[in-house]
Every structure is written in C-alpha cells, then in structure tokens.
Length: 517
Image (cartoon, rainbow, N blue to C red; front, side, top):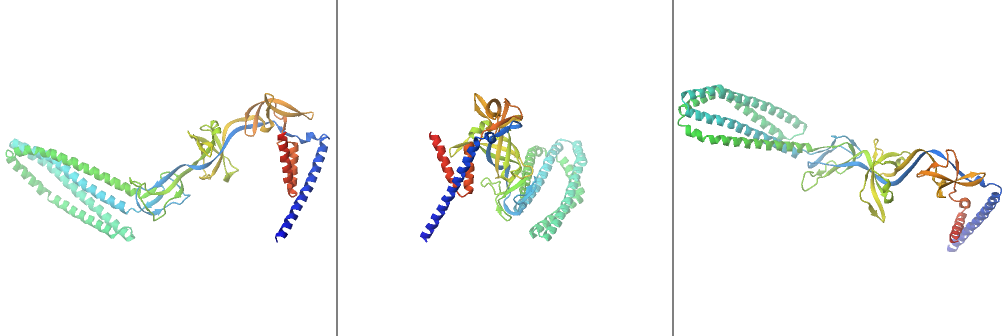
C-alpha cells in the first residue's frame, strides 16, 4: 500500500508541475503581448486619475475599548433573613422605588412592637413625672403659705384650690377617661384585624392572644378611669378638707414645708430623666421601624438589572454589621449612558482632549455610528508586554439600550476637521521639491505640480493652492505596472491550479535581487 500511495503522490506532483508549466507559458505569452502593446501608444490608458473635489477632510485617532455602564450599584439589604420574594430578573428595567426583594420581617416586626410598647411606657412615666413636677412647687408654696399666713391667707388658698386645682384635676381626669376610651377603641380594632389576619393565615394565635390581652387591659383602664370620674367630686371634697386642715396646721408644718423645697428640684430631675427615656424609646421605635422598612428592598435609582446574586429562599446577612459587609442581592446598572474604556497608544495621547467628539462603531450595528465625548484621560500610563497605553473614557448616549456592557467599541477620536475643503486622496500627493507634489497629464506626458496643502486627514488631504475643483491628477499605482502584471499572473495561476506559488517565488527573488543591487 505504501508503494501505491507513493505512486499516487508522484502522479499528483507531476500533474501539478505540468499545470504550473502550462500556466507559466500562458503568462509569458501575456507579458509578451502587453509589452508589444506598450510601443503602440497605449501608455495613457494605464493611468488612474483622481479629481479635486470639495468636502470634509477629517483627521482621527483610532482605538478599541470595551463598553461599560455609566454607573453600577450593588444592592444589599440592611435586614438579614430569608428572601421571601425576589421580584426582578436579569434584564428587567426598574425605576426608583420599584420592589427588588422582600426579606422575612418576623424578627424586625417583633422588635418594632417591643419598641412601641417601651415608648408607651416611657411616655406614661414622663406624664407622671411632669404632673408631679408641676404639682410639687404648688404644694410646697401652699404648705409655706399655709404655715406663714393667717386665716385670710388660708382662705385665699382655699379659693385657689376651688378655682384652679379642682378644674385642673377635672380636666386631667376627663383627659384620662377620653384616653382610656380611645385606647379601648384602638385595642378592639387591632383585635379585629388580628382575627382577620389569623383567618387568612398571616399571623399566629399568639399574636391574636396578645391583641386580646391588650383589649382587656384597655377595657380595665377605661373602667378605672370611669370610676375615677365618678368619685372625682368626693376626692375634690377630700382635698378641700385637707386644705382646711393644712390651714390649721400651717405653723406646725412650716419647717417641713421648707424641707420640701428640695423635692422641687428632685421632681425637675425626675421629669428630665423621664423625658430622656421617652426620647431614647422614640429613637428605638424609629430604628425598629427603619429596620422593618429595610425588609422591603427597593431600587435606589433607575436602571437595568445586570446580575442576580441570590434566589428566593436564600438566607442573607445584614449589610449594617460592622464585621460582615452583607449579602449582595442584585447589581443595578444605568444603561441610559455607557462609556467605552479605551486603551490609547501613548503616541496618540497628545491628540486627545476632554470633551473631544468621538465616533463609535460596534460589531452588532456596523451600519450605524454612535456619538460620544471624551470624559476622562487617565493621569498615568500603563505598560503591558512592552506596549505603553493610556486609559481614556468615552461617554456614549444609549437611550434605546441597544449598546450592551462588554461589547467591543471601535472609537475614532476626531482630532481635526475642515468642512467644504478642496481635497485629494492622500496617495495622490507626495513630498518633494521643497513641498508637496502631484502629477498631472499634459499632452499625454506626466508633469509634476507643486501645491500647498492644509490638513492631512485619514484618507484625504486638503488642497490650499495650486489646484482648483475639478482638476484631474494622476494617482500613483499602488504596485507599479510590472507588479500589477505579476499580480494578475498570480491570480490567473492560482485559478489554474497552483502556478501562482511559482510566480510568487520568482517575484520575491526578483525583488530581493533588486534590493541587493
């Protein structure tokens, strides 16, 4: 089988050589025909021309980068617990305040209810201390006055009790009665709501029992306030009798009244302490309410959900801990604007400035060019694999969200531009004669013309003097006539089965020989 394969290979090689020789003879014939035509005045037909036109001449610097969202926010939860609801998916657009997730609120709700109960108790203590603080100076002054005054002073004090203290007491008792009625009404409503929630399965029996206890306590307080109101007149009468008794005992109570002046300051201290307790309890309520609100995670800003880090049912940690940073829930990106992070070659940095317009293309929308501006030029260059670049950020409007993070962006930084300029293709102009030259054709003869140029753009060069719109200039061939012929021969040889390789080898040796000469 090896001999058979070798015979086949030899046969194939011979066929390839034969085809190459045929192609070579064919191309030699073409060269002979072309050279024969050169002497017959066909030289002018081989020229390429460019016309002086008017339009935009633009000079740019090009570099590639990756698209990134203008801003990204990693949303965490201040509350820890199980994720009961995860309301978004990757790619969803959200507005500020939209629901992201709900965390199990059981612990936070318990803490909130406890804080509210503590606040109620603190307010009651403050009310009691304030009333005692207000009453104590009056009692002290009354005691001193009763002790120092005679019958008239005692009588005036009795009138004061009838005109001031008794109405105030009535008002206080009436307030307490009204408050007890209101508390009972609230407790009954809370009990009804707890029973409804219990039937729907949202609360436990223990919470219903708690609501029942609060209702019973409010009812007992109302009964107590009612009894207080019903016995008020008897109490006021007793106070009046006590006041009369204090008139009779004024002299004996004088020393004790002076000692009671110390109690005034003590009552003031008790009021201040009770007020501080209320403020602290109120702060605890606010904190507990905030923690309860934190169980509902909402979007802090408008954007698109770029990534999800958890799923429904995941146990997450709080982001308020001084030890742990909390669990990431989603990553939210603002895609209304994007920026391309471009690595610009250090040789081009001097041509780039802030607010410079940039034209951007992406592979997904090659037919469209997006507009952007330079917003940041890194203050320090970076070198990687002996290539030094400078990071440049280009901001791009993305109102329809077609541009996606991670896309490759081809950026053209507009360095300079001239509108409505006379121009030629760059390859039509060459340096020489102390300036810039172009070639024109006069009487079928090539003639060099010196021109003045302006902006040298990417593909066009601005013509200032020496030519006018519509003039024709000769374009130098990119390869030369002999090279063009060899290129045609290579193409024909390739189509005919491989002779192009032989021609390329000869062509390379020819160029090498000229170089050595």
